[in-house]
Length: 431
Image (cartoon, rainbow, N blue to C red; front, top):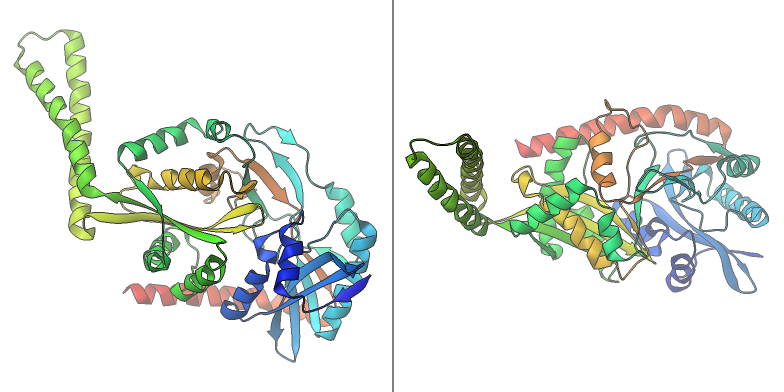
């Protein structure tokens, strides 16, 4: 076996895209993107046998003071983890490479599913046996960073995935009853879903900012999304789906619904001796009338502020190999009762159905207590009927124990400070 560095894009992606452990975070383009927007240096390394790559990984290098660094293989390595001999040799070579780069440690968070349930919450076979895999990685020098339950790790440790090899009708049948009803309502209101362009990223960015304020996370600058779009869209590996409504159309529809109700109410009110059933019907009609009038009033107010057409949500999706990931989703805080978000999800599930085998909703939680503020996100994604997966988590391969100790104590404090400063900066922009 021969250790190789600086693998060319075509050869690298040809191997990674078709491997069982393919992931867009291990793609050549993600490394290039990270170099532009994350100030990281990408290294594309691997092992060859008989002049063919048999294992590879993207290593993102973060420079640190004192000429130190650390390396991160996002969702790496791209290797058969069950082949202990190959994994041992590859780890040894990565460790030597890290020493040459004066790295303190190498972080990995492999796409290894240790727990999986279907949409009925029935247990299914995991990809790897947790205890055995943990034992192998520990023997190779990896330190496990714990079975976290929320979003404490660099990449989410839980997700929902939809098997796109199933017939579309079956995928739809796995949706919750509520989801089907909301998609139907969005269709009744003529919510439109279309592929956006780079120009639509400006509106998408605004939606991400609105979502940031509601969900308490820090989004990126507009340039970040534009760079990501440019890199992946050039090779037709990303799409921006936008859901929007024509308010004039919705007003017409609501007014068309209102007219016969008011006519029927006038007829009932003109009757002096109404029966019990007629009185019940009158109350029901009044309830529907009041709801329609409230909707019409809301639509008119939104129209005054935003104009006739308003984009309500945007989903940024990346495709790599035979998988897609719903990487970012931003939603408006008006007209939420149109359920445009549900309709948009359904449309890109249909769009990718014949193109890929796995649809990943890119992140949920493992702490399912009612008091967890993130439970709503989990319940929303669960409604689309995917299977629930738990990944094995993060591991650090420690190269320099002393500096690793310092790094793990100081960096969390620094990152928390940066996060708070970013939030303050965004708030000032809005004032």
